[in-house]
Length: 143
Image (cartoon, rainbow, N blue to C red; front, top):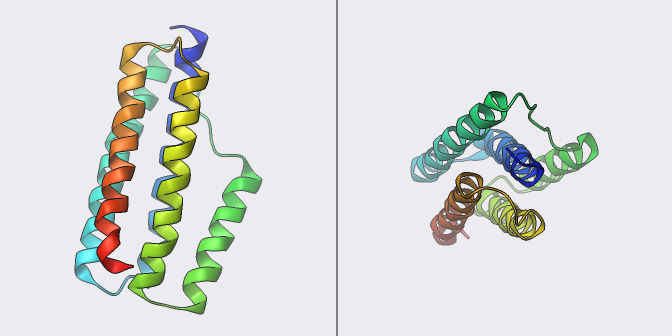
């Protein structure tokens, strides 16, 4: 496994963890069962992709990567502050849409940065982008 593949898998895994954490952070504020279902479905997709990236890294004797603690703390604070001020599905959808946009942008950046990554890791990255795009689309009706 080349270095670009390892780095792309680590970045995907880190982003997946942040996405799952973000969903978990907003769940207490979700009022609609439909929105809860949309978020849970996305979380399930992320978990599958996370397991896949983790398994590939472990098979290559490589470690996973967590988001930088400051980035994670700032994300958590933004989510909690925003949804605490206005507890509504609209606010949850707004915060999660911002997260999807950041996730999509980051994964595209890493795909461009780690061009020599293998096709399997690029496929995971593209499936992650698709999951984020799907969630972003599903959230539109709650904005």
